[in-house]
Length: 155
Image (cartoon, rainbow, N blue to C red; front, side, top):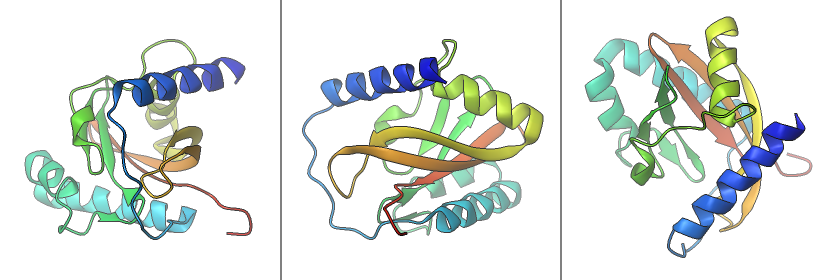
């Protein structure tokens, strides 16, 4: 677990260092139930529309897959990002390959359990800071769909 957290801290630091300064959005903060509901909605949409159309919809702000700090991300079973509603610049990148990385953890759990939760630290588009994030993910065919919330005390 310590390796996973260290890997995540390094990844977040590298992302922040390589990304232009961002302005925090004034937005609603998602909850864990909302994140899970969005992933289940996205999985059904992927089954119905197919990957090409679904990925385009996941990245379209008016398609119903983004709200406040809640957005859908999708990786293939090799860990390559194929859709990211909030950060389209990450499409084509790999979600961690090394032992203890977030990508390895998510893919392993998705292969064996099909769905689950993962905790990590990530940039919040609402606060403009790196914060604790909890994401629900679900395997759908050859893809893993995820969405997360930035838990707040008492929420």
